[in-house]
Amino acid sequence: MSLSLKILLIAYAVPPSAEVGGNRIVGFCKYLPEFGIQPVILTVQDRFHKQLDHTLMVPAATQVIRTVQHATPLDWYANWKSRPTLTASPKDDNGPKARGTHLALLPVWRRHLLSALSIPDEYWGWYFPAMLAGGRLLKNEKFDAILSTSPPHTDHLIGLSLKKQFHIPWILDLRDPWINKESLLTSQPKWRLDLEVRMEASCVKSADLVVCNTDWQHGVMCDRYKTLPQEKFVTLTNGFDDVETPPNMDSKKHKPLRCLHLGGIYKGRRIDTFCAGLSILVKEQLLDPDAVKVLFIGHTDESQIAACRQVAGELIDSGMIAFHQRMNREASRQFLWDADLLLVFQGVYRAQIPLKFYEYLLTGKPIFAVAEEGALSDVISETGIGIWAREEDPREIGEKFLLALALPALQVEAVRQRWEKRFHFRSLSRQLAKWIRELVDGQRTYQKGSTT
Image 1: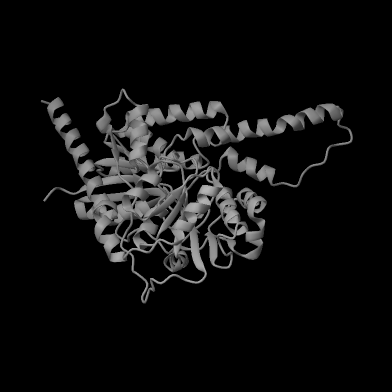
Image 2: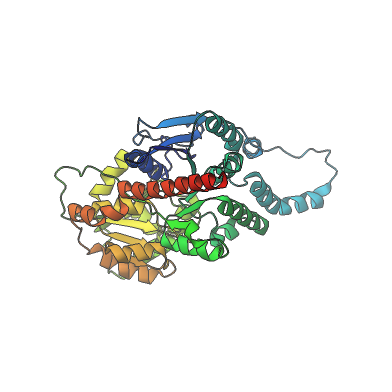
């Protein structure tokens, strides 16, 4: 049997953090020990997470080191901004014209300031505490490799520094792409995009292995770094774990039909064209508004809801479309298994497949996705689990939504048997363990050769 190896897993989004990326981390920690890899997690203390959910936890056998997180100027700015608005002093001699000019420039100034204060992201206050804790661990114990996983990308800057200091294999795991030009250009100044490109390149060049979570992302990275060895880039998708099927689950469809989206709707994703498509169907009497209920569970930006109200306000007012705040995993799972149709919105993230897709897949319920051609459309076609429509065309969305409503659910056992070898976290962990062992063995061979 192969010797057991120990890795330092650097991850901010570790349960009980409610971030969905914690599922991937828990999956690896659960199954890597079966293949001779023992992870030790370096993360932040629970009190620094925005939301906690104790229904998913790290396996008890996994050692977890939790550190503090320093306050940053971004935190100070947020506190300052939350103060009551100060009125201008009557002795102010700048004049109304000067004050008006200042106010006109304030949005641009604020945009650049916030970009500067959030490099590489809003979690960079964790960098120095994590560096200190990680350095102590690597000095006092024998670790065979480092694995950092993002977002947030602060995790990789920590991994980069520890790699340079201790010279052990480093795996960079991109749960989401670091660079998404379509998303960044709409929310950040151009200089920030240039800086992101340089930061990613620095990490990618120093890493021993770069793990992408879709083949589309893998292709993007290989094309972006043509001068690097292509074997440095590999694909390891997200996946699912064993779940208990609810007892007495009825495969018959409900009346009204229940359509569900789990998770947040935020910048870069949009649902207004979907709602406009539903409005078209109702107005043209192709869909009875009482026959379908659409529920969004999770935080939805107010701007997104406002956009939906503009195109389908009557459907929101009637209750056909409803928004509900985030629930914990157990409560959400009940809604998941009770749904008739599951919804996914990809937005500008063409190289990504939302982790929720794999949770959806395991239920056998049909999936309707609003997406452009990309990783998500490919996996929907490959699995035969649903239908997708392009984001910009409400009429196409409406027509394909009607087709999706008529799709039957697949047998849960049949789905598991067909896809567990590819998407189960045990299978994914087996492949990750193989890569870790190859990197460690390769470095040992190199070190042995350099000393003879």
